Image 1 (cartoon, rainbow, N blue to C red):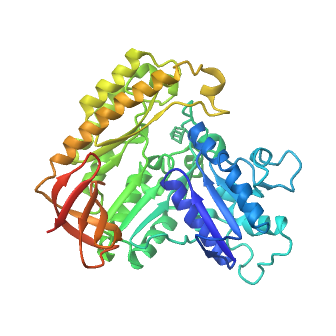
Image 2 (cartoon, rainbow, N blue to C red):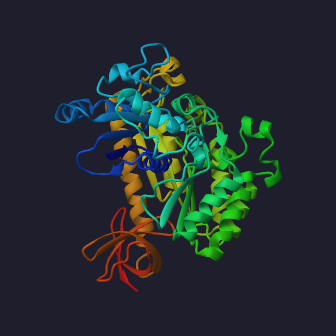
Image 3 (cartoon, rainbow, N blue to C red):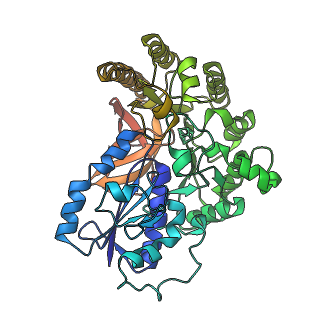
Amino acid sequence: MKYTIQTFGCAMNLSDSERVASVLERLGYEATTEKADVLVLNTCSVKQKAEDRVFGLRKILKRLHDENPALRIAVTGCMIRQTSTQKNLDEARDPLLDTMAEVDIAFRIEDVAQLPDLLKTVDPSLDFKDQIDEGELENYFKIIPTKSSSHSVFVPIMTGCDKFCTYCIVPFTRGREKSRDFKDIVAECEKHVREGALEITLVGQTVNSYGLSFNDKKSGDFEAYGKTPFAALLCEVDKLYELGLRRLRFTSPHPRDFSDELVQTLAALKTICPYIHMPIQSGDDRTLRRMNRNYRMPEYKEIMQKIQKAIPGCAISTDIIVGFSGETEEEFENTYRMYETMEWDNCFSSRYSPRKGTYSERTLKDDVPDDVKAERWHRLNALVKKISHKKHAAFVGKTVEALVTQQIGQTCTGRTRDFKEIQFRSGRPLIGKLAEVKVTDVHDFLLKGELA
Ligand code: SF4
């Protein structure tokens, strides 16, 4: 029996897919890129366009079903609110099953333990009794993932979100914030490092809110770890340097919970990489208020300054949404000027599209015309490209450490500690290795070099 998983969206989803793969492999399935018995789509719903991409797969899914009637299609991730199958005809049925008749199963990622039963529900001929113990998969966080890479791994530390940005559906699909047990995270990280991981990325919707949510505080489970449990967690994982860990990253933090203690902790640790992805979404306070981002520009700037002071040269990237409800030309200009001032290393920008079921879709008008959104997006991206090129140019002649993630023939591609993509040539196999590379040339979003 074979399976394929197609992942959309962020690092959190990549990490979740590794857990889904683990469950399927425990049931006796093997990964394939060809004809599969089970196809899982792990979806993203941060924006309506991300969902539309999944709905756009309907024709392909129908063709796959026609070619292989035994194929079972399951959808998970942020688009799913209700674990159910096409056999559920009651109100416990996820609406996606009505929109996409080709899909057999919808499951919330936290319910991945139910996948064996769900598969048996849609195909009673399946019998997994011998491959899996009852209750073994009950806790989503405790499932040992099937790693897609042994040298660079994602470790989820929390799920859900309490922030309720007005444009985002995540708090409704993933639910409220829930942090994972501290000791379990450290144990999983240690296991990965003992198996050869050089780089660990801790992931969560608002990763630095770890242990701080209403539920976490009520449980009292995180009190023992200090005022900011995330800083305490980083300190503990950093100790794995002794076992071979060389790079520790996290994504994505929320500016509101980026404390001074966290900044000082980052500066003091050996394995922390000098790169932070800190979403801002807009450089205008009025837009930020409508987005319910819960910080203002001066606070964001202050955090950036503290990071730059504590970790000189730290690369910082961001996310920006252009054309949000009510965004005036002046508001966009403020974002543009902010970008010129802050000189972020990179930016993942998108044009606002209302996501059904969110506060902004229900109560704010999507009143920025598409051509205006497109013009602002292109204008911003031209600036992003210009600044990225300028930052890359400063690397020419320097020697950087690259973790090689891909090698095709003699062309190696890797990431520097500050998350720049770099390419160079080597006749030796280097995937999963650290290499010293001298930068010789730059492109807008890529460094080129030669082995030092
Ligand atoms: S912080 Fe905002 S954008 Fe990020 S997951 Fe939470 S609600 Fe969504």
